[in-house]
Amino acid sequence: MKNRTIHVESILGDVNGIEAEEGQQIYELILKAFFENKKVILSFDNMEILSEDFLQYAIGQLYENFSHAEIKKNMRIENIPFSGKIALKRVVDEAKIKY
Figure 1: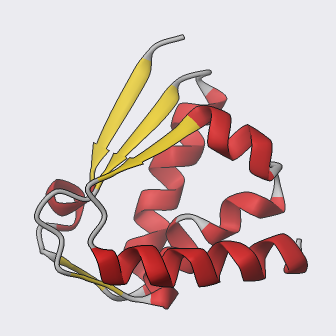
Figure 2 (figure 1 turned 60 degrees about the horizontal axis):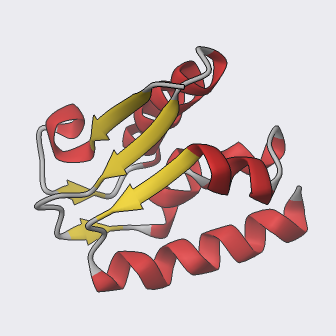
């Protein structure tokens, strides 16, 4: 299985991921790669701010169609800033309950 690296900064053209619409762009790229049977490397190089809204749309939505085990198996997150890790944990915990 091949990998697809998604460089968040390159997609957004910014070091801040704040808006839900920006997260939706990332989600659609992840989903496309999953449907093409590719593993995703989600790279947060140079990112400074990641809002919970952004992360909910980018990653949290995945839990609607995929189990936590499937997501962990098929996606690796790299270089996420510490504040982003905290926000992502909250998003994932909520998504597990919601979906």
